[in-house]
Image (cartoon, rainbow, N blue to C red; front, side):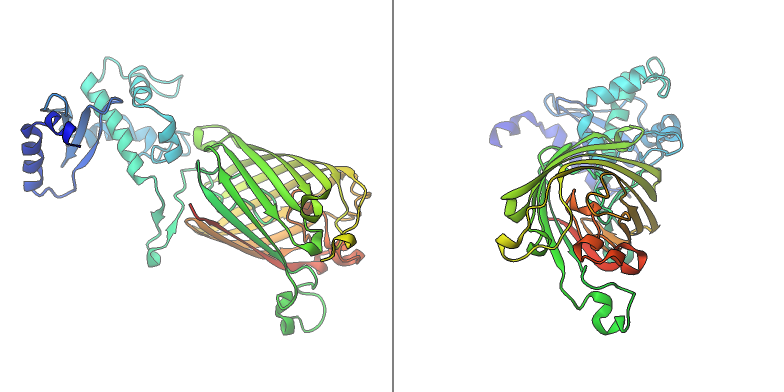
Length: 426
């Protein structure tokens, strides 16, 4: 630290002191103006100054007395006054941490200077280099608003959504994957509970046992880790009474609407082994496609190939009572929908028909699920009803009809309660 002090001259300290002594109405905003981090851009009351830390000079940015007005005049029509983009125009959200991480200052300034295809005009010859530098720093300044936004009510935080782009609150809708990307080095824990032994609504005195909640639960647990902002891995464990599977998975986000792609696409590879990964192995390949209908709704399609899939039957605490079911290749196509009815509340619906070898797996009707989801920043809680007790990739397409050996358990009358809970811990 002592070695760097001679580079900052008294002129810089005097300038900054005078700025704060004036007590401006709005707090000064500081950011680096170039990729070398040798020039500091300081904005005070709409006036922009360029501070060369190495040379110890301070000068007004040319034509930048109203830099905010310059952005409003030249850029806000397509990018919005707050830099979040305009959904109908399809411009990017400059407050997105992912987007800012992928852009360099040179890329931003080159785009301003030279334009981009037919969507972004070139400003070379219309703006000076100082103005382009100031606008580059202005784009960078939007990154400070990229974290979760306060909803106002009781200080709760929710995930900020970009115009026209839906933000899923969990790694799954109810059972189907959302393909939600994860930040590098993020750690997310997921829980699921399925009260599969009692239907929620059919039969007498459902209220006496809390609509099935006052019964045994199939409780599963998993951890997901972001290797990069595109690649993630996770491990999932389900209980003994559903054959005690352990699932290992890797997922890669190929396309992302936040990066101006037309839809989201995640590819996932997983392997499951029953009885704590000791037998009955099933390999799965998934493609998770999703498309935002608006910033408050998203449609999901999940084609899945499962090799050596097994009938979904009840297991046991004793290893020798976990059956060696024959392996059957299967193919399913899950379809789901999420609609935000409030900024932090979504309605969920999904169906998972098996289109190849359903009869061999004992699947007479595809499982259905309906749920309501509450999203609060890094948490999500989803409560709903379903006809499938499975939560691994291969088991989710099975139903309670084979699990309970009751043919009618996969009808709407057999819907039972369940819930999911997710939490990002790092």
